[in-house]
Amino acid sequence: MSDDQLRLETAGAAAQVLEEPPRSSLFPPVDMIYGLNDKPPLGQTISAALQHVMAAFVNIIAPALVVGNAIGLEASDISFLISLSLLMSGVCTFIQIHKVGPVGSGLLSIQGTSFAFVGTLVTVGTNAVEGGRTPLQTLAYLLTICMLASFIEIGLSFFIEPLKKVMTPLVSGIVVLMIGLSLIQVAMVAMAGGPAARADGSFASLQNLGVSMLVLTVIMVLNFTGNSFLRMSAILIGLVVGYLVAAPLGMLNFSGLSQLSLVTLPIPFRYGFGFGLAGFIPLAFLFVITTIESIGDLTATSMLVGEPIEGPLYLKRVKGGILGDGVNSLIAAIFNTFPNTTFSQNNGVIQLTGVGSRYVGYFIAGMLALLGLFPIIGGLFQAMPQPVLGGATLLMFASVVASGIKILSGVTLNRRSTLILVASLGLGMGVSFVPDALANTPYLIRGVFSSGIATGGTVALLLNMIVPGPRE
Image (cartoon, rainbow, N blue to C red):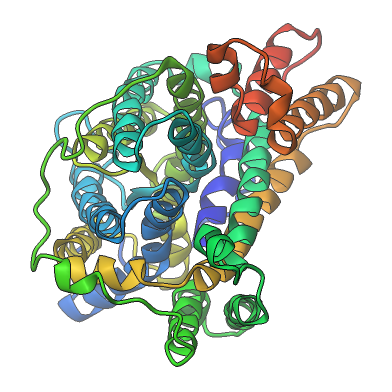
């Protein structure tokens, strides 16, 4: 199970948690060794914090790698994106845990870049490049849209209860499924060598496929071990193994490392601004979806650490957590990285360690920020061959598909819900497979619905609102 899968699997229950406490959960209550307000000894604190960082690390940096490569950024800019992803995750994690006024949940909740946005960022970004924008102009365009769209989630934090009436598990399950399906193609292209391999003729070579399959195999084997640390670190270990194997094969390119500065300086709006309504609408829609997912994450964390999952305190934490997601995504965009949302891999670590103290979260935030301050870390990961990244992301993206299926498995597939499901998947995947189907439509329609996620999600939401029958 990937880190992001834990996060997505809780989303299906999010529409019900505000009405009554769930009778069962992906994360059943456990006996805490250290509760929310406890202060563990320094050694145990550092150990628990390292496990959280190991579990979250790849998920935090992968969106920058995938989107950066997709829109054709230079190596130095991708390295910068990776560094800022880590640095902002540290800053945003501190805000979410510590609480700054009404902003933040006060729970042990890690913040990081979410795969929910990657597919649409890739689609919107590649369309922008094809439309004549340079890669840097495209990055400015994406970051500006993310900055403005973050206000959607900030606003939704004040309307949590009405939101659950339309964003039901049926809708969220369809969207999560579409997110995973749309990303698998990206992972397969990377496994075969990526866009650069198409240009030099090495695409789908036995070397590329062999390295990617090795990484995939290592991750799967480690996931079947009985060692919890190896399972949580499986993706990172798989990438390291692939990296080491790729080195003697001449697949690594360190030429850009000498150009990197010693320390990352977080310069606001480094790439400027850009905007387009066609790109804004699908990304704004995803902020609604991640709001629902984060409700589930926060509920699971509250349950694990023995805090209430109903009543005024619970509602205050959920609203503060969603507001934190929105504000943190705004901060992330200002400082040149993609939306930050509440991860749920920390729930798995909490369950395994029995440590739910927010005090540990300060160390997690510090470690992430420290990693982000040194560009050499981003540079080393930027130099990672596409087949190595593809072998890991294929499993990560496919696990998102599995999460969507799991959410939908809790929905009664009667005639109404089946109709909504098949119409949404049909149109969403149809647009993904045959984007030329929209070639003769107005620019705004073509831009908005060129993403299968936006198409399928919009159809699911609208049908769920207008088709007669109970919503679920």
